[in-house]
Each structure stands twice: as structure tokens, then as C-alpha cells.
Image 1: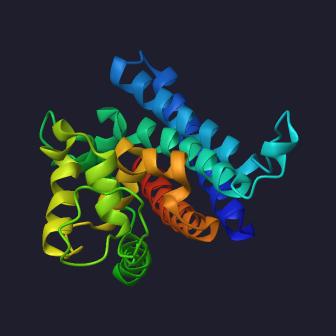
Image 2: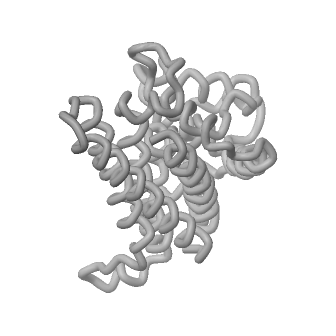
Length: 250
């Protein structure tokens, strides 16, 4: 893991801990409402999981095969992403926290819309978001050699996104949400609809997550590592911006 990522996660965890402390102090000053308790819980959970994420140094395995595998780094960073996403979910899943930052979301807004709200208020510079998107789009567009791929039309080489969509995204998921966006990108060879929020969300969603875990993107480990490193760096920057915004709002 990059040292800058560790520092970013540590700083964010500390900021969220302060936010939780401030929220708790306000709550216990009077008679705390359910909303106030929910806010303290969400901020505290997020801080805790980011502390686990920044403290993760390595993972140990019980046999030589896994201990020497070239996939160790990628799976370690995927675990770090899981910790980071749990922290993220603790924030956007709780209206008491999210409404401090964006009160415009309608009741019943999807997880992706709520996460996109976090990204929006994080203040991530558009140039940074574009750079992350370009890296991830490039990986999705890389050609692949697949032994059996009955969905191939013969119109061009099979690409990573083709495999994610056709082989790993079940029909019910293709018909909704992120699956629809993946399908549009496959059909039109246009990835503009896969913005940074969607790409990060898809990494924790089985559509992409299943490919990451089972096949390391069906390619060299470096390809997988670049994806997860890019996603982790982007998500860490988003969370830092969110924590800074929360510090002003709590």
C-alpha cells in the first residue's frame, strides 16, 4: 500500500472520530433523540473501520501455496477496500449523517445515488475524478483471450467489460441499476456513463467484485492491482473530503 494512502486514511479516521465526539457531546448535553444517536453511531463506525483499513499491513495464510501466490497483494488491497467501503456505507446509509451534507435526496434514494452525494460534497477536483475514470476505463477496455465465450459477436476482440457483463452479471442484474450501465457501455463501446461513483460502487457490487475475486480480472496480477489501487486511492480522497465537510457540519 502507498504510504500516502495510509496517511489519508489515518487522517480521515481521526477527523471522523472528532466528529463522533462532537455529535456525542451535543447529544448528551440534553435528552438525545434517536436521530442524534444514529449520527453518533454512524460516525463512530466509519472512524473505526477506517482505522482498521489504515492499520492493515499484510495478511497471513496457513499454507505455502497462498503465502507465495502472486495474488496476495491484490487480495490484501481488496480487503482494505472492504474495510473502507464498510466505513463509507456507515455514512451514506444513515440519513442522520447524510442529511448533514445533502438534504436534497428523496426518501428511498438508491445506494448509488447516496454514495454519489458523498462524492459530490467531498470536493474531489473534477480533474482528479477524470484521471481516475480514465485509468479504470482503460482497464475495462483491455483485450482478453477467452477460451470459451459464446457471447462473442465476431465484430471485435473480447474486452474485460464484455466478460464482466456477459459472464459474471446474471440476467436479473443486467436489467437494472449498474447492470444496465454496463450493458450500455458494452453495446456502444462508450464508457462515459460509467462515472467514478459507479465504478467504485461496482467494485463492491458482485458485477465486478466477482471477477476480481475469482480471476483477478482474468489477466496478469498487475492489471488487478492497478484497478484496486486506483479505486482505493479515489475512495480515500472522497472520504477525506467528506470528513472535512462533516467536521464543519456537526
